[in-house]
Length: 350
Image 1 (cartoon, rainbow, N blue to C red):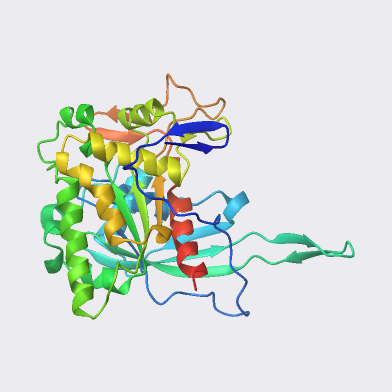
Image 2 (image 1 turned 45 degrees about the horizontal axis):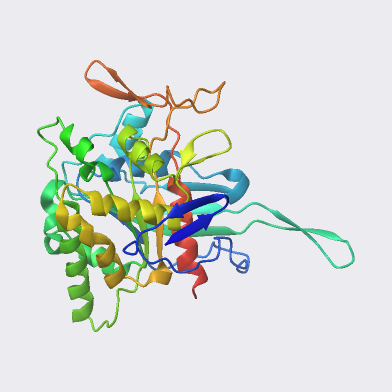
């Protein structure tokens, strides 16, 4: 079986995740003037320890989407601050990776956006300017350290997920690819199997909602995000499947939707952990296909010389200086776009 995207044709597997048709994201009709429209429940970011959640949060806090497409967006942490936010500030200022979470934390960030003005031409040729809509929603940050997430009922994350409408499920391919796992040198980096984590989390959420009277599949909108695309072994794995596009001569990307789903499914099937092959079926069993979307992201992106295009011989964005790993030029891939698309899918359904 095969699928075609643009001029590229991808060979798919019958066991690949099922993708339902979806309209491209875009702003809904503007609400009346006043406070930006705000959903009553947040989007939640979840993923196993060491999977890149904290670095992704840094990309959200310090970055933004393509303003020519999406307009101006920013994330606002609570004014009282926290150890997590302090570390995100300091690591960005030092151009290094944020330190791993060592203390349990739970907080809610505010995400605010303003779409670009749009020019419309009427039937009589008259041009009008439609002002960009202002929107606002919550991003719940629940970041218990290490293996604590293997007991989701004791960390409070199930309570947050039950109140949420959107989930970003972060999948770390470096815990799946054999060559990447073989190069793990940090003895403190415990490799929590991806399937084990998701199995505990989704079964716990399903049980909690069933106790509250819910029926059918989970009601959430889901973004399955394959992280660490900038890692050379992850990038090579995507290239081997002919799934990589060039972003106008700049950074490589794997298009969201079917190409990202094919990559996700292939990673799961080839994982060093045999149980990971069951993850795509688990996603389909727990979430409705029309509410599920697949993405490939990088919190730091690839290195691109400001004076040149992307260079296959010089794209590593991390350099070692003493004992520290420095980021040459933080340039996230598909992070904010994924967040905005998930928000749009929630908002436009109703």
